[in-house]
Length: 171
Image (cartoon, rainbow, N blue to C red; front, top):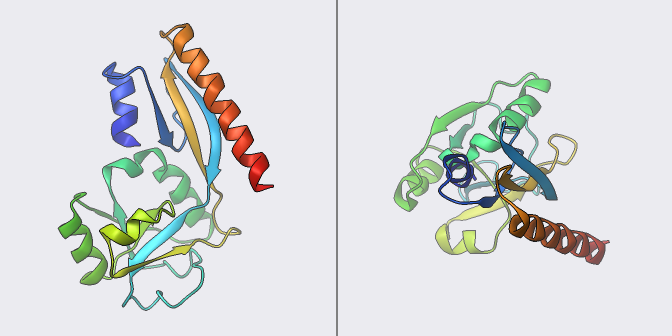
């Protein structure tokens, strides 16, 4: 999300789909959907046996701060602080080897979107939902430059229609 947003801001791409909101001058940001946050841990982590995690469970646990968290970091941090918890963010290179060490050796946690492909990339990990009363779902947004014309407006309307159909199917 952070790299995609930067590409739109720099004019390298016309639009992107990102996690989190982008309230920036010169950009239009439209919420398409919301995704409940999850946390990935090593299967040997003391919290791995829990069915879901609270922010209190994550007190003192190193939390990965990958580049792409920048769109959501303020939201996540606000939720932690509302519970009286200062999150322990750790810079993390987005390489599989570094992520594996962080999860296994440093007993860290990574906020993720529940995606079956994570199991392939991190076979010795588990993904747990965050308790819904602790943190709001993360918005999935379409962001585009205000300078772009009709083709992107058509794409925006298409994505909004698709998101609406997905919500209806789940209900």
